[in-house]
Image (cartoon, rainbow, N blue to C red; front, side, top):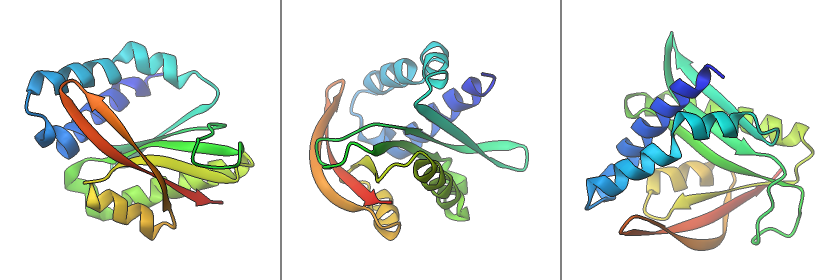
Length: 163
């Protein structure tokens, strides 16, 4: 439960680093970050049995985190034995150090031990670096959906991988 403060910090910081430039109104972004990464919301999320979190450290510094939701089906996948990769985020200055790949492997291992047949995720279409990362890790595009934050509208790919 002590991890919620690190996850909150990492969530806000990495989201801002990755997507902050896409917001015309900074208040829309800060409202979203405060709501999504509030300590109360994270405490509620972390105790749910189907949610799994990992924090990556470089030395003593928390530099990234990941979250999956076990037993989470998708309209784009035929199997109900699926889990959703909800987040893999790494601080900008640590991006090219293989930390995302290590977090990804932990997620695969957990999904497989949970007897999931598929893992799926949503990724911003314009986030070419992330799309490439997932393609390298054998995910394929299986659908798309919109998502809005404040006044901003975003288009996402749904990608999945058979385990």
